[in-house]
Image (cartoon, rainbow, N blue to C red; front, side, top):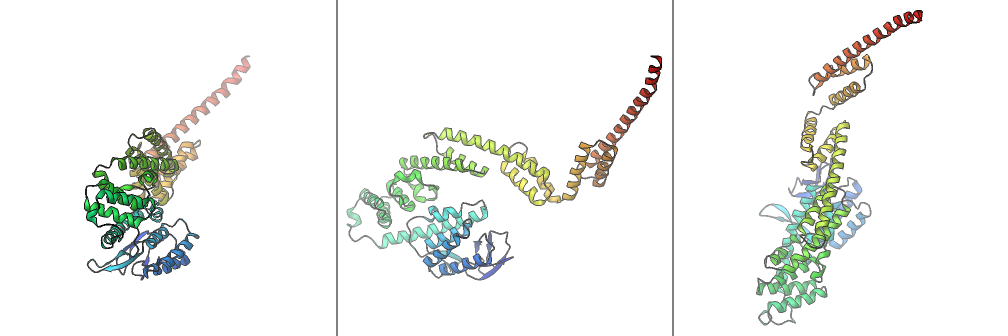
Length: 429
């Protein structure tokens, strides 16, 4: 058990070290935990969290950056840095009686494409990953509401009234602001264009570019994240923005190729295959898709052989569980479903002592040369009673024991015959 401070209500609670997501026993809010169980690191994270909760975001960010020098593999630190960047403070929501994130900083780039957030979700821990994404989606909605209020309540003083500008004029001005990286002004222009012409796809495209902090749509193929997180993306596609559709497919192709080349796991290759298949027929997408499928089949065979070896040699629950996870990931490859069931039965019965004895008996039976070997193997299978096919193996041992005795008798008879005949033949010669 370790003691942590809730990053919402800041009260101490205990939880199991193996957990990555838990509920605070005081405020009841679900939250992720740091990977480290080092008291000094946890204490430093608690101090940084307190600074963030008191809206001292710059100081908190400095502390978290110092922690990265000690542990760069902890996704929780990257997540906390993302919270600092977006000025997130948790407040109590009376209607549902839990702590919810509230944004204190207006940032035009969506948290869902923020660098720190993307590093935080780059983990194989799915409960942790889902928790980050769920909370980030809530923060993104809150952020957009705040930005829309700013766009409506604080119009530019040096531009004509809305009635004097068409939606196309507003989009053009928004694009000029994008080129100068003036995200706030660009967002205001595009938001007004949407209010004047809700069916204008370029206005929604412009808001998407602000969310991603891209100076123009030509940079869309270079993004390293999924654009479909944005409602502006879906709206622009829905309104017939074919250029965005083509550019996003190019982005999928680039991301798929990059992921395929750096992939080390089957899930990463599967994700790469999905991206490449969604890219359509642009450029060399089909060739890359074929190459990715070949790599998947090769890795499946490697993982299958590895899991079979782990299962055959496993002497602990952890090893059997590791084999079961690999077989589950392989899904219907070869006899993986049967292997999953076999691993499950072994885990269920937790009968490693008898399993080890069974394997020892099989090994002895296979390499037996003398009566004593068959006797030892038979004794092992006899002690196992109804475990697996121990009864059949016992009968096999006894049968081979008898066969060995019969063979020995024949050999002795043959030798005795030779001993009698040879002298007779020698005398006659």
